Amino acid sequence: MKQNNRSKFRPILGGHRGHLSHIRENTIPNFEEVKKLNLSYIEIDVQLTKDQRAVIYHDTELSEKTDLSGMIREYTGQELRESFEICTLEEAVSWCRENSIGMALEIKLHPRTMWQDREVLAKEICAIIGRYDFYGQCFVFGKDYGMLSMIKNMNSRVYIGLIVPFVPEDPVKLMEKMRAVVYLNYADQLPENLVKELQEAGYWVDGSVVNSKEELRLAQELGVDLIESDHPEYILELLGEKNES
Image 1 (cartoon, helix red, strand yellow):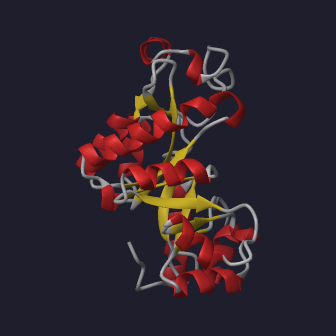
Image 2 (cartoon, rainbow, N blue to C red; image 1 turned 180 degrees about the vertical axis):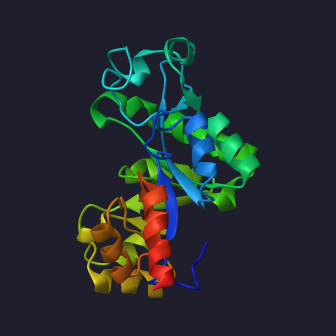
């Protein structure tokens, strides 16, 4: 998964949680809308239910976007399906595989209350990616480096990415140690020389989330490889304007 033909002009664009629309994010109907935009990939979020099913949902707490209260892990998969439309990880991977769309899979865990879920979720992620032979079209990322190491140890074929909310002393050494391929941080937190150093060492840099003309300009000036957007249709328009100029 090395990026050889890098371009500061047009980073690879993905849909953040699918995209923002009247259809709830992180659902197959939302992904169907994204498909029409011909994006390379979608970024989605995974966590575990009470009965240890891997489901796609961004927030650990349900009250903001559903009629339920509490956390995903307090409900079974069936209870969540009966209450509102929820997508399992297996359904999302199957859909992406069938529609030839890549996936950036973010692990959503609340460390204090979900610590015991880590190994179970790691096994589920590895099993589902393996079942659909989805290795080359997917990377798994997050802030829990211990869990990412679990995944890599369980199945070395799974690509991983690191959310790095700080500037490491040696970013290349960090990527090597973690056997990661994608380095992620907000574009305004990425020094240009750090981006260049990582890319010269063969790693991908993700400078998301990009939702405005100013954020896109910065991402392009930095030369990041990947960006996700809540409004990918708007970013596509901006990229089109750039191509015409």
